[in-house]
Length: 510
Image 1 (cartoon, rainbow, N blue to C red):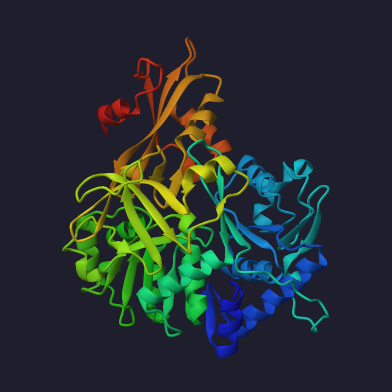
Image 2 (image 1 turned 90 degrees about the vertical axis):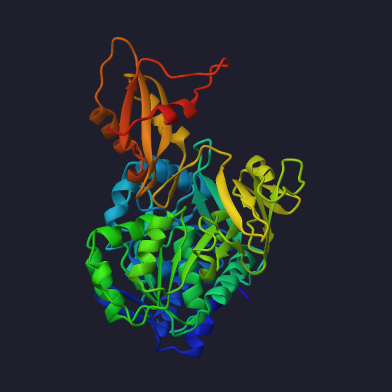
């Protein structure tokens, strides 16, 4: 079985069932299958070979999902890109993945125009809404998915052990890591989540998170696998519209990250709504405060809340806390999901005792096969067939797991993993900056607020606004510092390394 079989089997079982509801359109499984097969045929006609990468940059749910299954039907490897991007980021990811075909929307062509002449591997770009690029073959996306008579195209046979998808996640060095997930990885994780959430074809998820995130990717796969419905509105600008959709479409599941629920609870009419069809809530993407959990529990009147933990490298789910233990084990990420084994180990590989801190180590069929073209990083993360997550954790006498911190300096702001070094390097590109250090400071909504600590060259001058605008010109919006603090010097160790712990402890919110 391959990932695309989720769509084919669900369509065979109930072709007229709705698969996607978004904006003014409603798409059945039969329509989704037809468009995906048409795209697959078009990709093969464009010369896509088995194992070649197709990069997708769009915020249109139907286009994204068709591209996802169409790529895999054609034997390609799907690479979903964050729509909060920049020319530099896009070029780096296209070059790194070696994508030969890209699918995008007309409004994102602005990121391609300045780099089109320097993309040696990219041969074809399918553009929804039309458009052109210098030196690159551009095709109208609508034409690629247009229904046509069955052709004689034979789609390639692929094995479940072969690569299905690359999901990019920020690396601690600032260079993005392409997490390589096979069909088997995604099949295993999808099956496990379907099992512990008890998903069926009657389920309907309110999707507020982008599909290019591993969490969103999991929601997509689990609901297509069971023949359920995806109600998609990935903008929280008008949260009450999402609440209205939940009632109208009889949503049964509400997945979110802590900032999702904080916004709904404090900046919408969520507490006054009632959702008769809702049967569960899932939360991942970072720790959620016990106070916010209790507030959420009160609003949804005791419906099950699943606190979950995972990593992109695990397709992504690794553990969940049974809703019955939500307030009995506050702060816990629960226990391993079906099919996964979790251990807390000393660097020596020996298990820690209850209450001690060690690194969380995972094994199972869902664990990635490595980082794309990064053998050293792969060897560091995958040892003895197990994923060393880089997360520090403890375990209690009953086997419940608790996250303590992270080995790396990676920040988690909102649902985003952010590399401090990448931001520091961009700050140093400014002519007035002598030194930079980026830290995360606790934030009730974001989890961590991104703070840039900067020393200016003498006698140069520069304002906070100028540096933030400088970052906006180069980085995606979610990586731009929320605040810039200026220093005459940064605290350092005897070896010259910046003591970020001193910066964090000395930081005072004003």
